[in-house]
Each structure stands twice: as structure tokens, then as C-alpha cells.
Length: 87
Image 1 (cartoon, rainbow, N blue to C red):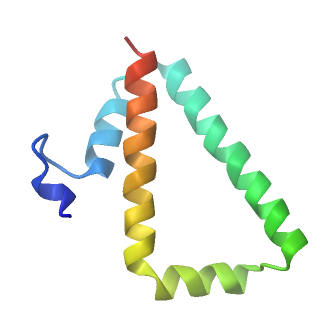
Image 2 (image 1 turned 60 degrees about the horizontal axis):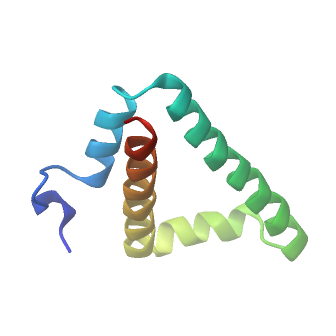
């Protein structure tokens, strides 16, 4: 699916940043804090499971389609969470 052709125009990333720069700052900070906490948890779990930066860099280099789809999902989810709370 080409997100650029979405009826709302622009990519999920573009829409996310439009929302972030115009939403309530505290809401945006809270949502970003959640993402950072998840990142820390994933790093810790990854180390416990033997996943290192080389594994991560390999994933980033070799699985671009999955990475792009995952990023779009994150942007869409965060945008929805921020919009829902910003009303």
C-alpha cells in the first residue's frame, strides 16, 4: 500500500510531524516517553537474549520493507494516540 496516496495526503511520517508540532506539548512528551521506555525495555531484553547491535544493524540493512511498514505503523499509532488525547 502506498501511504503517499492516502486520502489524507502525505505519508504517516509527515502527518505525525504535523500533529506533533501542533499538539499539546505535554501529550507529545508523554507519548514520546512511552516510546523511549519501550526502547529501553527492548534493549535490556535484547541483551538478555543475546541480541547485539550487529544483529540490529543487519536487520536495518537487510529488511527495509519490514522496517518501513513498522515505522508507518508506529507513526499512525502515535498520531492517533496524540489526536485522541488532544481533543
